[in-house]
Length: 438
Image 1 (cartoon, rainbow, N blue to C red):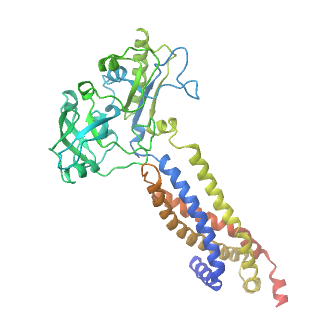
Image 2 (image 1 turned 45 degrees about the vertical axis):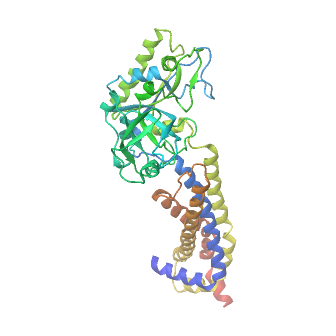
Image 3 (image 1 turned 180 degrees about the horizontal axis):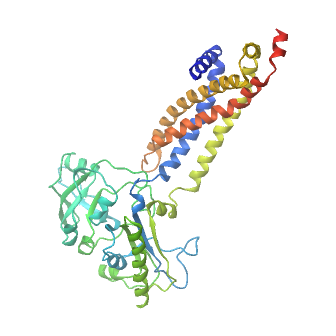
């Protein structure tokens, strides 16, 4: 019966190609707009590490001014990062499966003069666990091990673009790169990697691309690597040297992540950081009420407001626009369906039920919805490709399987909204009146 109704719908749509084109254009426009903006929101809201995000936790502690909370709308706001001192102390815990401090800097790269001139590049300073925690993809080699952290060893991981720039895209594992005042051996080259959200560092602009180079964290004091990101502090420190900066216990500039695979470990780690703060209070630090936060990756993205309210509003308005497009087709479909009242009356007289008549016309509306939706999705592919090029940082936004299914669902809903009233009207018309007029 369904295939029969689809054949009848196809014949009906071919009878009036201009009206059919108008119906399809309205649905296609609505689907294009709604799919584009819902996909844009989805790109920022989706889980960047499915299956792992619930095990990765971001650590924050309130070491701010006892006289006033950290600036923010919430009176319980707390600094978004940790101090170097606190990060070092937390690293001593055996509870996490993996853990890493992390910050961004800009260092000078001095390549072979035949290849390129010296230049500054964004560098991410991390521990060995970083790469496994965040599923960083490699095309050559891999990350360094924990022994390289301890020494530390002069090893480095570079991204695909740097590998192409300095080594013509070949396997550069084992080759050297001069960073600031020393040579580093390349141990890994990343595969092309551009997540929509830089989820491992949500401070500042979370849509920035990943850094080009990754260095072992323990070179921070050796090379006097300063943070190129945000840093917060409320005490008046006298900073005469880099060592003074590192020893400033209440200047926050380190992002700190831990991997805790079980609820028992998560609870134990919460107790660990609470006890750490209580101990620090005895030394005159952490004078505010106990306020530590251990949030998993998705919770942290929510706290840092990765999905802007404007994106959610635009997505909601785009869906309403699709609904308006559908409702504007009600009059056209009503006129089209009522024009075939004599034909419907004959079918009713021959034994067709109201439900069969209703189903036939709803199927026709759904065929319009599906075809129009397919056209709309094709258009949205083009719009999203254009947005990827014009958005700052070339943020990758594309239709994934989830959003394609959502677009199909919206197409079916649009077809139903447009056709439910006209289909109901035609199936409830008394057939005797039309037959008498015949």
